[in-house]
Length: 390
Ligand code: GLA
View (spheres, rainbow, N blue to C red):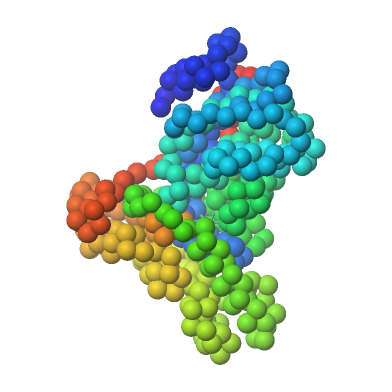
């Protein structure tokens, strides 16, 4: 939707054409490698997308917060009167959870009219939730002159999702959409929060995101189950050494898991996390050396590990990945995000990209009955006000 139509929708909802709303944008993200490592204190390598969430926002004199979205019909308003409780409407819980974090910090929230519009598919592993949270956080920080740093806004958004929405996510998504830098991926140590921007130069290759178009069901409960399995692994490893998280073990230590973790399921989960951290370290190194072929191989290995050891893929993702790998010009392809559905991310030679999308769509549809969606994203910058007027 262009700016003019979006603003028109805002005026249709809220009237008063004399006062212009301000526009903010927060990207979604795609994780290139380093999956299910963030809540294990490990490494991730995501980048922000040019798809995400737009927010038009304007102050009012009323003691009300008004929420609306241009994606579907669902308007609501709520009086500002202390902390908010879960609204029962899923999408509004994301901004409400963030607003609560501001209130908890003693920041006085006054009347607002807000219209959201997202062009990142919902619940497809591209961080639509973090994108709504961060666009709200950045807008409130600006409007109420709260003076909070990006890392504080990131942590407040993660807290909103953990405590208000009830999804026990790590910090990767909010960090990526908050700190994204155009044409760079973020190499983040999720334990120390130290990070480095790494330029993404894929030569004559391109990034393609493919959405399985599968409706995801049990993602949150399976996600929490994986988290507890990792915690269990850490408990069992205390006899070996007093680790705080699985990422304190390096790749050479995978061989000791057999001795200390007898449950094969828990052992496989730990194997994934430790091997995935090793892959991220190597992936960042080879990317800096411009070795895209090796980067692609590591993406492939990441998927295989998420399928066999971590068991978070499923038939649809595996079909996209393993059929995709048979096509010419595919350098690497893997699931991205929490998954059990959602999207894959692939690096494909530019000259073969049209063929890749056509042929993959045909075989995927034949196997699953579903129609995949393709995105060729640009790597964009983090959440920000994108216009100056107030
Ligand atoms: C979701 C979570 C992230 C991360 C990924 C898996 O996107 O929100 O914190 O755990 O899954 O890598």
